[in-house]
Amino acid sequence: MYARIKLRDTVRVPPSKLGEDIEKVINSLLWEQFEGRLDREYGMIIGIESIEEIGEGRIIEGDGGVYFDVVFNAICFRPLHQEVVEGEVIEIVEFGAFVSIGPFDALLHMSQVTDDYMVFDEKNKRLVGRETKKALQEGDKVRARIVSLSLKEREPEKSKIGLTMRQPWLGALKWIEEEIEKLMKEREA
Image (tube, rainbow, N blue to C red; front, side, top):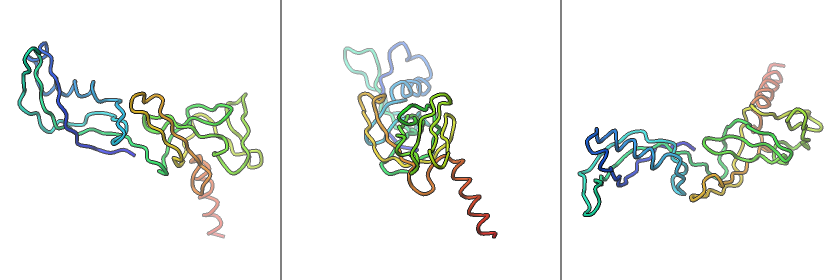
């Protein structure tokens, strides 16, 4: 999910910034260029951690900027198919819930919440199990598995991630805690 990666790229420092601390300028330019960028190999780049190496600057005729080869470390978030993730329910809609996982919002369709039939309670903005009466609402922390993944490099906001909680030990964390307590009581008896 989260990873530290080492990247190498060329950064153009504009002429107006050449009198400033070059490392700070390059760090700022790296943040502008990479933060929020989606790469198929690395996932979403969250931020720049550190700069390891700044090469000698090169000047290209007709351009007042200076080009530096830079090696730097970045933190990225790369969701993987079938990975178990934890997130927070940020919105309940009539067809399911949207769950925030890292920098992405994933869809948890109501058919994938539990084995019980879920009903949308529009008044209270929650999903409720018909038989179990388990409720899922905004703010709930959940553990789910990624079952579909479509990352769009050119338009990251159109990326789609589908989740399921219909497997053992997945679901709202409060449900999982209740199951653990129930098992502990059974063991003691």
